[in-house]
Structure formats: structure tokens, C-alpha cells
Image (cartoon, rainbow, N blue to C red; front, side):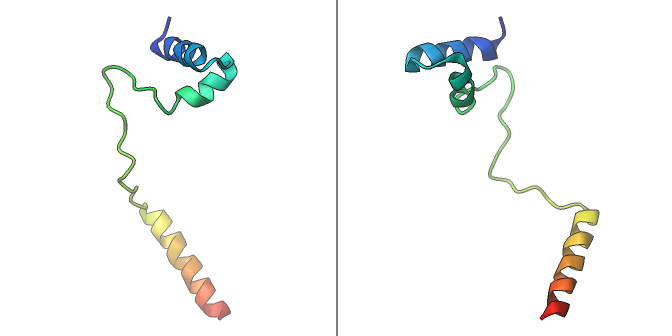
Length: 65
């Protein structure tokens, strides 16, 4: 069985909830072995396209005022 399924079953049993409910609850505490969890504190840098779109939106907002 996969690590994820084992983890969900353990959470379901420990909290006395259904497997379906446990899937939602278990994602907060699941840490896959051998893989690093992604850092959540680092913000994703916008791409050039995203920067351009943001600038265009700002220009439109300024024109409306």
C-alpha cells in the first residue's frame, strides 16, 4: 500500500472519522518520505507576462480615477 493511504487510514482510525473525511484532515500532517516539503514562505516571482499584465491593469485603474 502507498504511504499516503496508510497515513489516511491511521488518521481516520485515530480521529474516529470516515476515510473520506480523513483525506482532508490528513493532508495537513502528511510528509512523504525522501521528499522535502516545498517552502511555503517564499513568494513566487511573477513572469514577464504576468508583470506586463499587472502594469496594464494598474494603468487602467489610474485612467478610471
